[in-house]
Length: 277
Ligand code: PGA
Image 1 (tube, helix red, strand yellow):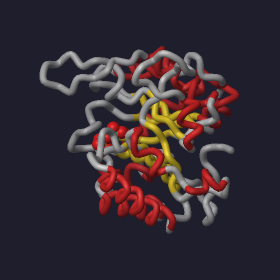
Image 2 (cartoon, rainbow, N blue to C red):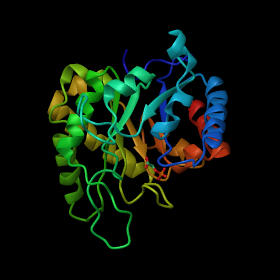
Image 3 (cartoon, rainbow, N blue to C red):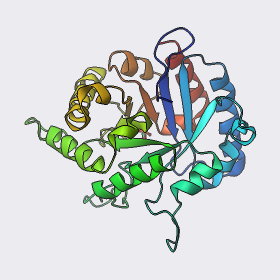
């Protein structure tokens, strides 16, 4: 099945993925967010909703349809990370096969909070995954039958356009091992690092410009026809107020939402806004 199908009203379905990060702190809160998100998503007609809770909460989010093998769930479940190894002595790691077996259908790979260590003192320490590791993770995800949500984004913007080289190289290496035949299982999430966790999102016109560039890079790798089928999402300081403009003016296929995805009223409103577009 391709990532984006046509909604009941005939338009292209949008995708909203909630990245809960290391939140919330209790199972009760997690159950509450899941229940409210499912309720809101059940009323939508043109939006695919995915929640990515921390690993311990995943079994509580998995749709019952997975267990009973019934039709499309209101809310699909994703994971925030995965190992590229299949199984074995890798303490603390979780395999793609384990996630898929639980009913997970999406996995975020290469989120900026897991990629390169940030040199500045006092900033959030990162784990430091390389583009090559990210590439192996994306392949592990599709080999297990799930969809890979590949994050990319520059740390800073400069006047000379060097960030475009950074973005191109990050995408090329992160997709190095990713096969063309699996493009229907790939989503690219553009997340400028300076906007992730920040106060202000990128302006929609710049989102549009950058996603065009990403499409060009994907076309260079896979050929234009195939590359244009890959949904591009925007992420970084998205909330219910800016979601509509980012999608319509930024011309993206959906959103990767961090903080607002665990803020129930805001996320419900965001889903409603997106569904009207
Ligand atoms: P944010 O995070 O929406 O809290 O900025 C986005 C993300 O990290 O995916």
